[in-house]
Image (tube, rainbow, N blue to C red; front, side, top):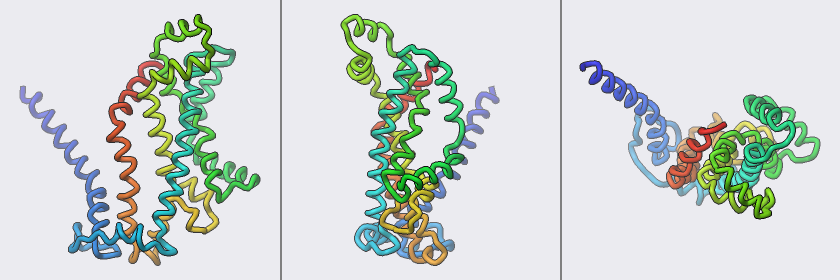
Length: 281
C-alpha cells in the first residue's frame, strides 16, 4: 500500500523538479527582455527596473546592428513558402506510398526511410557548392529550395494517417470514374485535417528555427538579408553583447510567439495527426 502512495509522489516530485529546471532559462529570458539594463546582469535573476524599451527599440529604433523587422519578415516569407511547398510534397508522397500500388514501391519507401535517418547537416557542404554553382547563395529562393527539396522524405507519419482512411471510399470513387488526382483532392484531403495541420506546423518550424543552413547560405555579410536566427546570434558578438543583450532576449521572446500561438490554436489537430499517423506504418 505504501509503495502505491510513495511511488507516485516521488514521480511527481521528480517531474516537478525537471519542470522547474526547464523553465528557469525561459523565465530568465523573459524577465531580462524587460530589463532596463542593456547588457547581461548576473547579479540579479530579475531586473531591478522593468521597461518595454527593448521591444520598442527592436521595431522603432532599428540600426545597422539590430534590424529585427526586416529579419522577421525575411524569416516569415521563407517559412511560409517552405511550408506550402513542403506540405504539398509530403502529402503527395504519402498518398502515393499509401494508396497507390506500383513497382519498386517498397524499395523506394525503404530508401526514403534510410535517407531520412541521416542528419541534413552531413550534406550542407555539397548543398552549398551546388547552390554556389547556380548562383543561389545569399538568396532567399535558394533557402526555400534547400528546405523544401527533401521534405518528401518525411512522408511516413502522413502515410500512416492515410492508411487509416477506408479503402472502400477510394474504390467507390474509382467505380464512379474518378482519377487518382480527384480522389486525392476531393476525398482524401478533406478527411485529413489533423495530418495536414501536423505537416504544416512541422514544415513551418524547420526554416523558422534553423540557424546552420541559414548561416551557411546567407554569408555575404549584408545584414538586411539575414534571418532572425542569424541576426539575433550577431547580437551576441563580444563587442555588441553589452549593448544589445536585452534586445536579444526581447527578440527571442517575439520569435517564440508565432510558434506558441500556432501550437495553442492547432494543438488538438496536431495531437490527432501524430497519433493517427502512428497507427499504421
